[in-house]
Image 1 (cartoon, one colour):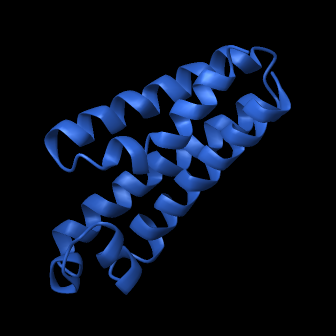
Image 2 (image 1 turned 135 degrees about the vertical axis):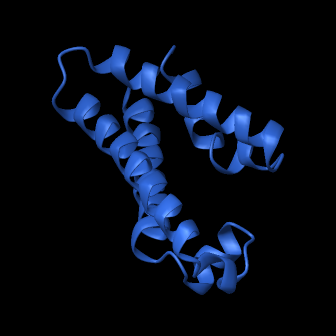
Amino acid sequence: MTILTIILSLLVALEFFYIMYLETFATSSKTTSRVFNMGKEELERSSVQTLFKNQGIYNGLIGLGLIYAIFFSSAQLEIVRLLLIYIILVALYGSLTSNKKIILTQGGLAILALISSFF
């Protein structure tokens, strides 16, 4: 893998760790409210907090998977590409069902990283 792909993939991992932080540890913060365009009252609901925390764990594991693939895997490129494609598909689904910006905000770096992995 090129240095560019590694850097972009690490940035994607950091992005997913940040999303995990917002969803799991700062569930009802002002920042989470702004990022997810939800009122603080909504974010403080027990059911929403449970859903966010669960989703946050998934996002953290995606970040962890990228870190593992980059630094420890013998199939580095294959696993990184697989995770990047997964991220892009989830972002595409989110842009179709929730907010059109998601393809860029959640998938933009992943798209760039995936493209760079072919050069």
